[in-house]
Amino acid sequence: MVKKQMVTDLNLNTRINDIFFLKDVEFRVRRDKKTIDMFFKIADKTGEIEAINWDVSDDKVEKLSKIKFARAQGYITKKKSDGTLQATISSLTETAPLDLDYSDYLPQSKKDLDKLMNIVDSNIESIKNIHLKKLLKTFFDDQEFVEKFKKAPAATKVHQPYLGGLLEHT
Figure 1 (cartoon, one colour):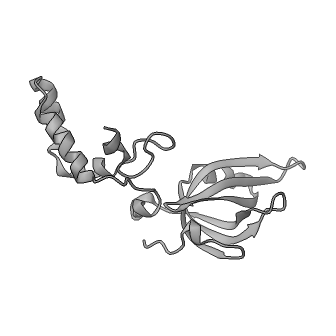
Figure 2 (figure 1 turned 45 degrees about the vertical axis):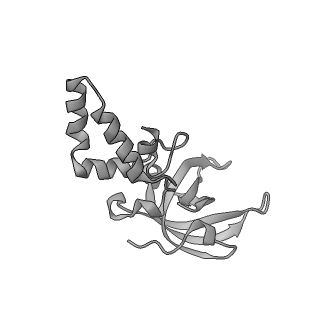
Figure 3 (figure 1 turned 60 degrees about the vertical axis):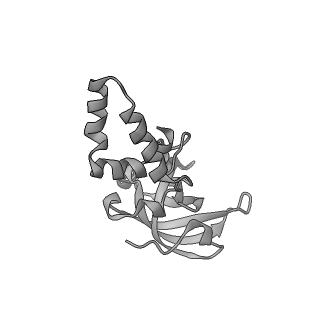
């Protein structure tokens, strides 16, 4: 699926209708002790913006709390509290992550991943323990594994949380 709207392109009154990564999902019960609102962030490789989905029904809370990628529909508004922009979402539809190009949703390493992979290969070749070397070669001689390894983030928040981060961290 081709991503058309990026977070940095969202301005006041912009209609939203695209797939985003959902972060920091939190549900809050209003003072009436009945109404539940969903607070979260919609994100992609360009950044993130606070979002709210008003009046979520009880039966949808569990499902919505597990969604990582979703087609969000709504519009950009200003928060009454401080005037900053937020996404007011009227509809969230889960999207299968396998159908997505992660490079649209996660930032990427600025380093040359092929050069980093050459360093890893060189380090593996220099290992003297034959058992450890054989184990590492089992993984790193598998091109499918190597391609996934090169693209994987090292973490979700702190240490290299971007595509290529795991290789960089290694």
